[in-house]
Length: 351
Ligand SMILES: [Zn+2]
Image 1 (cartoon, helix red, strand yellow):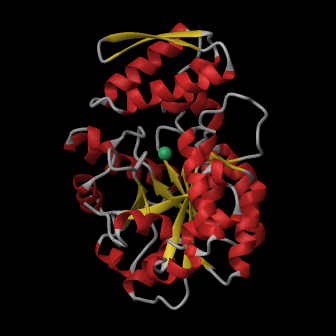
Image 2 (tube, rainbow, N blue to C red; image 1 turned 60 degrees about the vertical axis):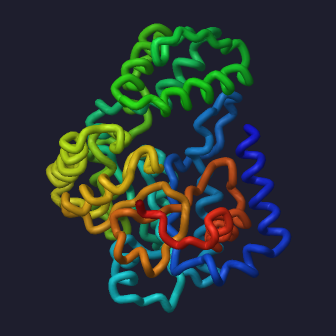
């Protein structure tokens, strides 16, 4: 666990055990929460797991669902959340479950839990992933670093050398390279560097997509269940803010078209890839609306307030992070207090 994760965990524990989340919750909890997940699968033993934050265990997901039901929280579809906002029906607090990227473990481990409990969920598919042509660069980078003892990499014209001799060193190297790549203005550079790195260390850059993502027939199985909503997550999983408007428009419309072709139904919901402020901002919110989406989800952290009905393509989410798999953390996050305190109880973060 890195220092940042440890600090966040300490803050969540503090808010919980001091009861601050309960005292301030009525001011900050809004009307509902949209939780984000990626992988849902049993814990793995590998020591080097830099993307562990992107996976939760099936047991945690099931316990959370049972707990939310026990607390009389409405677990609703995105359509029902939209209706609640539109009709200003705020009587019962709600939770939506959204899973990004379209991993096969969603079908294998999460879906049986949704079925067992009759719980709706939304899956956001980057349309190149079921085609097996998508670059899951964050996992490809993980595999390249796992495969070597030393990394040489040129970022921004500078040649850098990193030690990858131990799991700890690999973790540090991953974080260093990951954040340098995320800082590049042009995402094409990021993708080129990761692809070259993979080639140098004998790793298939498309391997993660081929191994981990569902194909269309698997997605079709899920889509045929009324509990499951399929949304779009772009074509290539680009950080849209880094691309020109024409590319963004194509990513928004072509992903919807590909899903419609494969599943016979056009998605009306979108989740911005990566989804933070460096990836989705006011221009993308407007373009998603222009493209006809009824709702679009960022990963800006926060809960839903009535005011969001005017900003349906800029909705915040709360990540169910693999490092924070405890019901009490989910309680504190749903209270909205961790997001309200640093921003003086601001309700909207949409520009
Ligand atoms: Zn994603």
